[in-house]
Structure formats: structure tokens, C-alpha cells
Length: 154
Length: 108
Image (cartoon, rainbow over all chains, first blue to last red; front, side):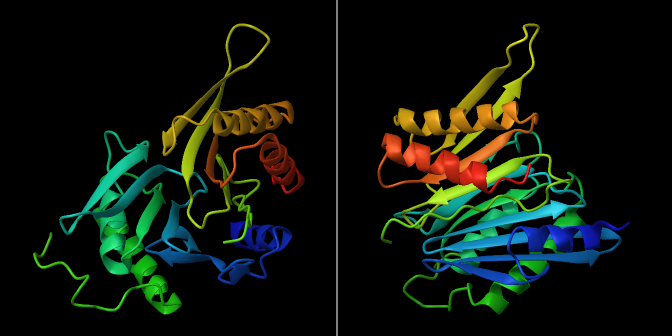
């Protein structure tokens, strides 16, 4: 498929330098887009880092938005809550990713994910790649005792 | 944040089945809205616009979304729109600014 060359030119048309490049917009908003090939499946990622929020999109072979979830720390307890805001009613693929991203980054998280349901391995691989990139970009928080949860949540 | 506005249309013109736009002045995504065109029996299309996350009492947000989905529809596309607006002020100028900025930078 010539989709990868097609994607590169789309990125150039939109002002991005190349697939996998960051774009620092004015005001410190960082957009990172990259594509990974995992087990014959093409996974597209887009991460938008806002000051107090992270938006992440995971596309599985297509550019559909998929299910949209919002997740955040729930005061006063130290748990993380997640809700589906688009799709995700009968299939909650991606909701776990949203929850765990909040734990990893300490920020409010919006996740869009169009991975088909009943693909736990694919979901896990996608999450792994996403977290690797977040750590590489420096968005995962350090383990500070004040903010860390006392109880371990599964 | 000083009134900045960034727009991030999804850069996959031919492959995209959704349009996603984000405009923020406040450093977060703000309110998320969803808009869809519904083809009915009549010649005129109808649109379904709703807030799916965030402020539900600000009619200007719905107005911005409605304007955008109508523009999208009149340019021949029936793709649904997901729009997030984190705005400090909800005035007519902001509405016009956002709609014109998105239409200038459109990828559909």
C-alpha cells in the first residue's frame, strides 16, 4: 500500500515536517504524531500535550476517531475515574488505556481509540508504544510521594 | 495563556472518516461537541449538534459547531465533526474567528 507515502505528504501539507516529528505550536502546545507497525497492524498515534491535559488518539489501520474517553483523578480519594463520551457503550476498548495514562502522567487525559473490540493484545501493544513515547517526550510524572496513590488500583 | 488559539485538523484528508478540530485559549480542550449530518427524505439536510463533554449552558458553543457542520456539508462532505472548544469568551467575534480559521485551514 502506498499509504505511508500518502501520509507523509499529508503531514507536509498540514505543516508537519515528517511522520514522527513534533510540532511545537505557539504557547507551548506540543503535537506529536507517529506511526508504528505492530504484528501486521498499522497503528497511528497522535499526542497533543496541553498545559494540564493530554489528548491521545490511537488509530488502528484507519483514521477514524473511534471511541472517545475522558479520565481524571477524582478528588478527594486517590482513584482515577474514566467515562466514555463518544461510542464505547458496548465496547470499552481504550478506557483502560485512558485510566492508566492518568496514573502515569498525573494529568487529565482524553483518549480516542478505534482499535476493534476483543483485541487485548493489540490494545496492550498500542498502550505500550504510547507510553514509551510519552516517557520519551517527558510527560510521565516522577513518583512523588505526596501525589502517589497509597492504595494500588488494578 | 494570553488568548492563543491553535487548530489541529486531523491531517489525513483522504483516509479520514471524521473531522476533528480543537481550539483552545485556556490550555485545555474545554468543551467537546459532536455534530452529524442526517440525510432525511427532504432536500434540506438536518444536523444533530450536541455537547458531549463540558459546558452545556453556553449556546455560542452550539452555534459555532452548527456553523462548522453546515460549512462542511455545503462543501459536499457528510463527515461527522468532533469539536473541542476551550474558550475564554463566547462572543460573536470569537465565533466568526473560529469558523473562518477552520475553513481557511480545512483538509476536506
